[in-house]
Image 1: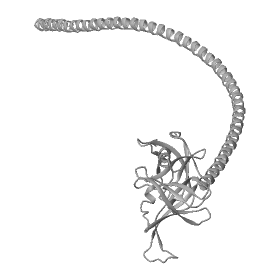
Image 2: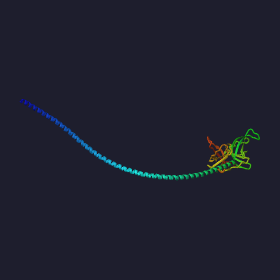
Image 3: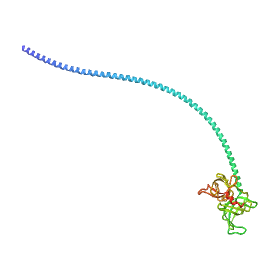
Length: 353
């Protein structure tokens, strides 16, 4: 029994030790876990504190930024309000300016209408004045044209009265004593410079009658009644293309020879001749130039057949004898006439008449 008790006692002792060791070991593990838990909890608490501190700093920063933002918002609101006030003021000022502008436009329109009406009245008055002036000018021009026409007719009639038709005719091979055959050689014009009861003196161009040798050609002058009478060559000036004819007939009026150098450049002149065989052809022009020999250049619409026709000034005085006609090559609407000055005519007539 004792042995049994002893065994039980030893078993109990061993079991107690085992339990104690187990208790100690368990307590050690439990303490270690608790310590670890405490350590982890402490770490987490530190993190939490750190996080809270960071959150507090962040909240503080956010609060500060919020305060600044609120301040900026307040400043912006104030600025916007000020800008709105300025804008409202500008709008009011613009409205006032618009009102003034509308008033100005209305006033300008009124002034423009008034000016337009005034200008219209002035324009009508000016048009009426111009029309009256134009009518006056037209009437004056018409009078001038009428006067020129009358003067031209008078000049033409005067030119006809002193001009004659001169022709050179060759005597034909077959002829009898009563009816000789005459073949025309050339035609031209002439001017009566003096006449008596039975005779007339005619000046013309030498080149028209330069073939007049007795027995083979005769010079004939046509009278105003249409008859032809023979003429005789009294004297010639070949250098200046002049000839003096004696006609046994009191032909017509005679021309007044103007003094030497009395015709000036741009003076108006006229001539009456027998251009292209047409009787009494009339042309007007200007004296436009002199050469060294005293010949005069005229702007006259002359043609072959006018050679020997007289060139007269506006008063009807003889200033030259038309000697030649110049027609530029390729042109048929522009001609010029070269006239022999009266100083050569006077020289030729000296001692004859």
